Image 1 (cartoon, rainbow, N blue to C red):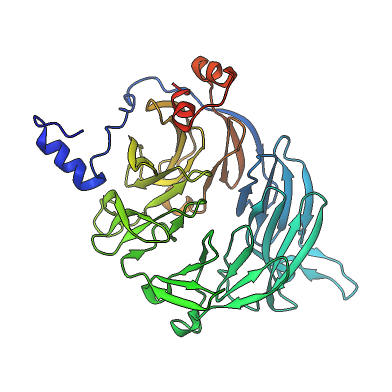
Image 2 (image 1 turned 135 degrees about the vertical axis):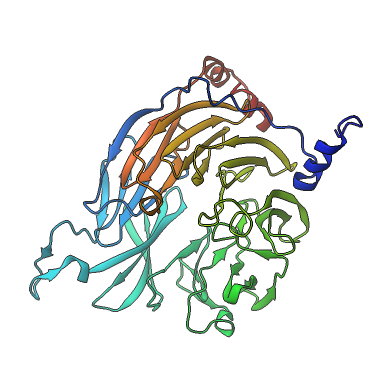
Length: 417
């Protein structure tokens, strides 16, 4: 509540966040920070891991390298379950003669559709086209291949439970049926980098505009009030909220989706335009259950509850934020441009642990990724290879975990105290 005796701080909070409750105060930087324990690592590919995704049940992960192939692995011991387009030598022999690895295929994207279904996109150079491969884990088989004929070196797909959005069309991966969009009206020669929503619509960003397509009903509309933030507009899995950049004031903004009614702002004007580090972009992440999100701006990270909209935590990092991750049970991980990996307990604002990597400078710190393993206390970081950390469990956390009965969402987060 906004109290009469503190008008200025409350007014400032209203302007930025709609006067949410005050977040926990993060522990002092001068205090002793526990060290995060490394419990596993894997190189997987001689050229490094370029792509990484974890399944929603936490049992498997997929990893790939643009020129060395793609694989499915078990999270418990990193054992390979499948490898495709594998290329570890300088050349491979075929009935047609030897050819270079780099002439075989390029992997451009991968991800999970559900816990048992995953995909990857690959361009086979001899066929000169792009293909989206969809596979199941049990049984291990390919269930569909869609040729998308898009000769771009930034081939990114977006998926929901039923469809794959790729450039200018929506593809039913079960049947292969395609639904084209009108994106070529805006940029006929360039890919649109789509975001497919849970309700089967496609958000694209042609010509610095934000356009919403409904390929199933063949409709199109412009969303003038929104722009992508951290490369995309995020729609929560329950299809009720969207997070992006307001074109009115260049602030991180939460909307109702699909009504697109503004709920509130989640940052000041962002650093790409007005911040102290214009060379670094903002970083946005959503918890897997879609109930919390975090935004990193300069050396600051804010964690918000989506419903009701509320600021839960604000913390600082030694360097500008590089990448973020949120777990469903209330952990925030941040990796910054000085090589610091830090993990916080959001409910109480305390640092659960830290690890310092060798500082390789801004140029060597692109393409990093953080992922919490579901149903565990482990954190994966993609940084050349893969490194796995174990997050310390506090006695109270263990007690809460052992308590019987069903807990509410608030009780889950408070149980970490």
